Length: 311
Image (cartoon, rainbow, N blue to C red; front, side, top):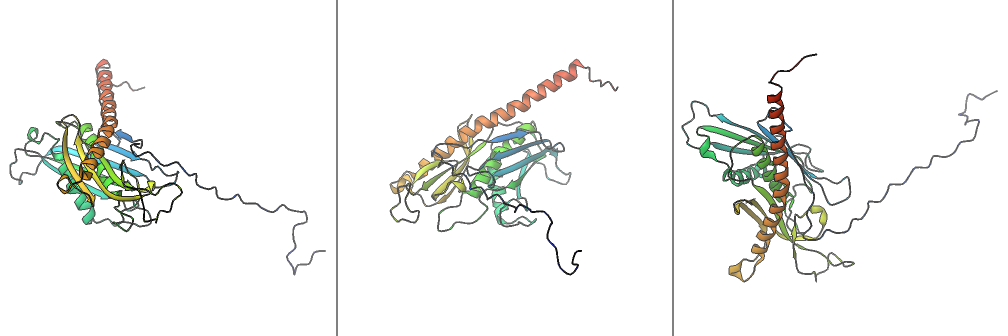
């Protein structure tokens, strides 16, 4: 007979539960200064838009760390309102917005702030020189960039050096927007690709990162906040490889120019252009894939006579 006033244990023996430990993150070897990350770029992913694209830049850190994800949507060219004054060139507007969940550890608001407005102006300046605006008089072309994920967040400069998160966002936005413009069928003189380079001072292997005697900074292509090291200065460019023209140059940090007896600015520009040239190959493949798909669809439509048989 059981005693109802006490909690009786199980009649049979049980085995205690053993929980598996948390696996340690795999330490990846540091990237070479001239090693670039792989880029995923796809067009025609937003049906309502005239042209669209999606770009993803993975983080060099282990899985689970934030990456860079962007979407671009292009609307136009479409006529301006009748009340707008006549313009012989198309009016280009670019708007960059961070999603509320894009930055880690901090939720962003829905109203655009100064950072987003500044990046929008930089993006517009980088793209307007590549589009044949004279071919679309009294028309408007609207470009919208949404940052879905931002690696490293948007923290400002601190004691560890220059923060390169915003520069990676701008470079990715330039490439993603140029692919969307090409997907929309808008006439361009060339495609624009973005590239980033930075002067990074890294501690020697086995040394202390806080040691005063750090080695001289080296030029790192496509820097990432997850790479570590102290970023002394950085530069981002918008580059048209076919015409060998720079449409945008944005620098941050302390650097010496040729007039001051140094060549750090030239090294950063050359590194950023090298990165943009490599990114241009990915941009060409994405646009080529979209063009071949459009040709195949038009050929299939002509062979079928444009009629669809319903079963």
